[in-house]
Image (cartoon, rainbow, N blue to C red):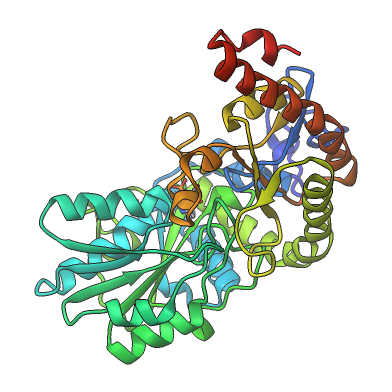
Length: 429
Ligand SMILES: Cc1ncc(COP(=O)(O)O)c(C=O)c1O
């Protein structure tokens, strides 16, 4: 029998070298020997080695179906139960209130769908104009299919007018779905106050909290929400698994109908390795809140302040204080964000314009335009989102490269306007 290393499950692979435990290359991500400087943690995060290690046995050894009658299959149930406890602990929930899903998008859709199905006489949904497309697109779909949806506007700093929210709740409002942290600007909405308004009006409240865990403490009881969505890949676990917290008092109807998995609340054979990885990531995330709010916040502030003071004609989008500690959304007037992305990419630097799901689209960010930015300013905006693997040296590297990149991007924009010629030569500088 080949040796089994019980301390490090990764080393159970056939042929694994027991003398060299698995480690990610440090300090930055390596891709084809090229160093990557990753500042796009709101798009997705690097999987923690501890998470990979926790998942591996469920690909290689314990790959049975949790619903099977025999021990080989159902032995994985206890590992899913542990994961359920770990994610519940991250948000202060009872494990029985957790429904694992395939992603944050499914969790958002499921919450709104459930509210409409369980209250068939209520056909109105109240949400905001700055939600992630994982919510917006479903609400737009509902509107096209006969439901009424109100998309609340936001102020120029990205904040919400709570009086307007309260006034917009109607007798036929099935659910209020308002996100916690905006993925593009990091702006935080006052969840507890919104939940109190919803409770006083007897309306269900769902929040998309996908960007929050690991950055801020989450306690569903003190928040008072009925439904809350999370996605594992934003907290150093793989893409393809998420969860919906369903308060035990909230009526719930499954979105995916099939087998009786998740206590009949979500059909589909459970993705055991990913659920286990999500659990381990949740356990780790409880400890990263401190780092996010001290070291990463300081790195973000230094990055932002240096850019705003050293590169002319730049401005921040969203209020300075009431936002996630890792996110900075800045406008570089006079250039196209896509040109900046391209030029930074050549330096191995990863940032984004708006949400990863809409990067590449020609329309300006719906979040920034809802905050009153002109289409041109919105299209000149870049999101920097830091994470626990970022170092001060990486921020220095970005700050060294950025002024030249912005000058080149502005030159390219000017060349396009004045000559209407191809911008490639200017971008190549
Ligand atoms: C705020 C927010 N909600 C929902 C999602 C969608 O999550 P998933 O990619 O797991 O579907 C994202 C992902 O970018 C997000 O940032």
